[in-house]
Image 1 (cartoon, helix red, strand yellow):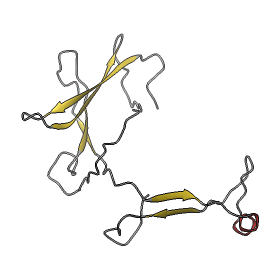
Image 2: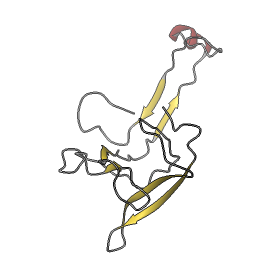
Image 3: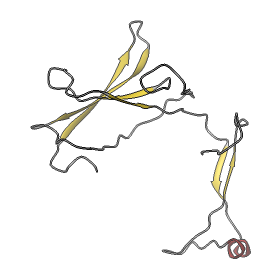
Image 4: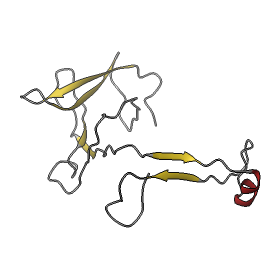
Length: 144
């Protein structure tokens, strides 16, 4: 479920800085424009841009989410007091760009042989090609 249509909010993002001035994260605030948000499960989406440099988010850490970088979600009143216990979720790694990733262009005979059908509402078989800049650290499922 998403935010109810009657729940009008203002969304702001603020850079969080360490005492030495280095960025440590962002604070995203959703403030109801009138009244309060309804109780229950709510969802929202943010349009964001990943940082320019790659960042790993290793698990197995002694943090609230078990990873180096965590998302903290909490409900606060107008004075900044907690209304509920905070929830934490692991962040994600930002990887280097793949040197190449594409949907293969096929000849007519290759389309027939592989079951490719680009017509509307038709079942389709797609073939992707990609290159990695480095070998994955372990065998197993590779999530692209």
